[in-house]
Image (cartoon, rainbow, N blue to C red; front, top):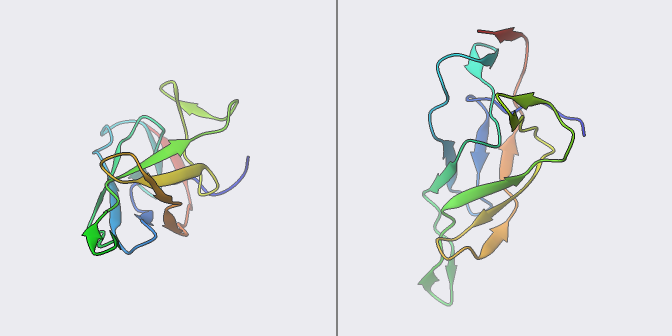
Length: 112
């Protein structure tokens, strides 16, 4: 699997315009451009999704990632790449489509 590593500065949204934010990452660890690298251990919550079905609100509430086996790990959790498979879900776990990821720049990697 290849692609840029997702970090705390990567913009992630649902296909309906909502924004996905990860729970705060630990203050120490792998950093890209000074921002914490994202792993499969982080929970991404979606806010601001206005998706409706037959005028009934069905907003995306979370992003679930499916990292490939054998990838790079940070503290035992797989690193998330822009190419990592993922889907947005409603609160009832109805799949809503893949997240929209805005390309992030990764200029430097540091370990802390």
